[in-house]
Length: 192
Image (cartoon, rainbow, N blue to C red; front, side):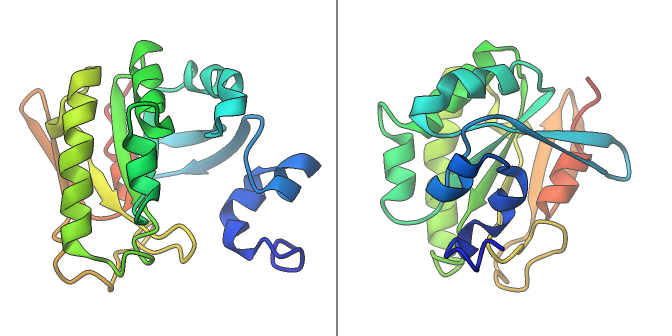
């Protein structure tokens, strides 16, 4: 259905975006819930809007979370806009921490548009680590997972597009956890 209306690139957001206006504009306006199970947890994803005009809805969704997944676009210009002084990425990380969400996963999306560049991945980790540390998160406790949401790459199964990628690692209170995919990072969340 998304492809028929010229919104094929929004195919995963399309599943969660229920309002007609969301689908027409290609942006999330209201929070949406999606449930699934990992090996460890019954997970409820609260898909919160990223657009500045709907920040109140984002706050409502985020205030209920045990862990935030900060989706960062790897595309040239997109990452820089999000991490700029007034960028949405920076604002969302600050709001999540301020609202009491102490666990964070960073999903570096659109790696396919960055040709799965190791240099770009490392650049984003470095910049993002600096600002999330200022917000209050410890970067050593945060998995940084490269993904392509459009292709579903490295979300459930390991990517074959980044031979350089050895996986993510986090350490919380002396306990190390590691993995490769976004699914594994979600499964490694510490119990609330």
